[in-house]
View 1 (spheres, rainbow, N blue to C red):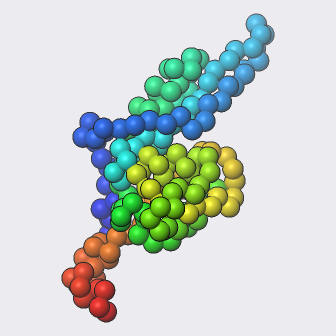
View 2 (view 1 turned 90 degrees about the vertical axis):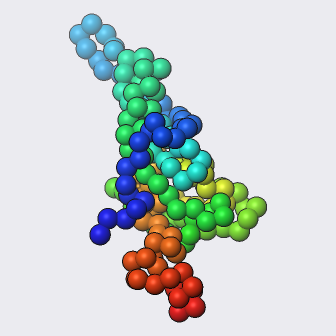
View 3 (view 1 turned 45 degrees about the vertical axis):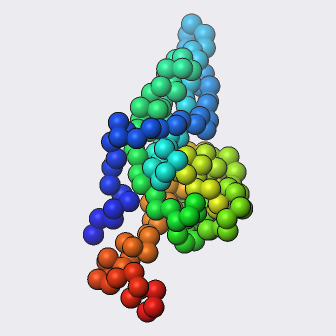
Length: 172
């Protein structure tokens, strides 16, 4: 059964902010010397539960970033948020990148590093405890974080799947 938070969102429907996570200069050695190109990893989000990531490659930095933003707008997903935090603890994995996300009390802030922080802030998460336990490669960390966020289920969604009301779910 497809979950609501996995449906694609059109980028034109939301105001997206973009964050550059990683910029890498790549040198290709040829007979005529070195040819430099750039790869950019960007995270976009509206701060209200929508987030996406993208990769762009080009000979110019600004062109690479533009391509990455366009790619990120094609890969948007929704995240369930409850009072500025995530609904429950969740692990995410992509390749060698492993992450752990835990909800936090109001006022805690985003306790996360590097690439994970960019994804969580872009999604609009204000209070969360996060730990990256595997690879520190920003590509894998971002994808593992998005895997964890995609796996989140709100109480409303669980009640709907079980055929219960929210009160019946909580009172058990």
